[in-house]
Amino acid sequence: MSISTPVRHLASFAVAAGAGWAFAFIGVPLPWLLGPMLAVGALSMCGATLSMPKGARQTGQLLLGCGIGLNFTPTVAAFVVDHVAVMVICALASILFGLLSALYLRKVAKVNMATAYFASVPGGVVEMALQAAKWGGEVAPVSLAQSLRILCVVTTIPTALILMGAVGHSPFEVQNLPFDIQGFTVLIALSALFGGLMAWRRITNGWLLGPLAAGALVTVLELDLSGMPRELLNLSQVLIGCFIGLRYRRELVLPLRRFLPHALLSTLVLIGLNILFGLGVAEVTGLPAATMVLSVSPGGMAEMSITAAVLELGVPLIAAFHIIRIFLVIALSGLIFRYILSSKT
View 1 (cartoon, rainbow, N blue to C red):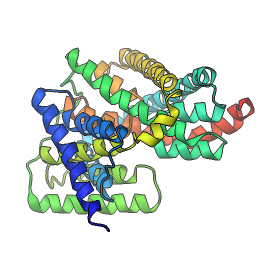
View 2 (cartoon, helix red, strand yellow):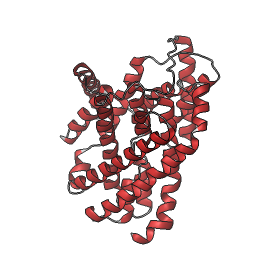
View 3 (cartoon, rainbow, N blue to C red):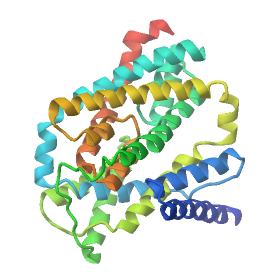
């Protein structure tokens, strides 16, 4: 490792953490996520060579996943099980809205169906890019569109909810366990074990889902090892926000500047359709409207879970909705393209 590499890592983290602190100081919503994401993204677009050390994103996911899992009390777990059917319906609707958005994107951006479809379906950035490559799509536009989707969701929906005062309406009682260093050490060790096993099995978002499962298991069994300090939740946001910002590299975005406006409009259409559907589901089920908006928003699981935690909007329920959506998107998107859309490429 060259001397410049650790210095670059430290400088990148300093920029991210400093932006988070500045955003928190002036009262911007989700400061520890939005600050690093926007600051690092802007500098990357200006040509700055920023980077994070290997394992930084996984560390952020581990802390976040563990914190989410600690909210899965027996009452919450039973509630989630009772609403699995609603979660599946919402996930399938999200795939359908992605398809509608893809049809629009294909027409206006003049790209093939594989590119438009995998750029629009709300799955992971890496997973959808790989699928696009497999079925004859262009990887760069898909990666950009998927990253843009997360950026748009995180910068618009939380701010709108805060401005409307739709915060602090969790359907569950928040569990605030005291911090215990011995219990916390055991909790982190279990989270690392579960995350490592899922990553080893190449499970998508393994470093998020594994710790989430570990935290949920500890909570459901009522072991009460330790709570998750707010400072570590903020650190997880800084690391995840920095990782998102690093995706907006100048050499990736500039060659696609003609594709970018179409992708942005397509993304806004996708977000709008999901929000309207979420409000409808809230009306039918009686769940809080703000919780359902975040539950069906086509953002990343980590970003939406952070948003839910900061806004106090039913973290475990929202996480469960996104887990099922991601699972179904990854399981079905390739099949849908193969059997329904491939002839339209």
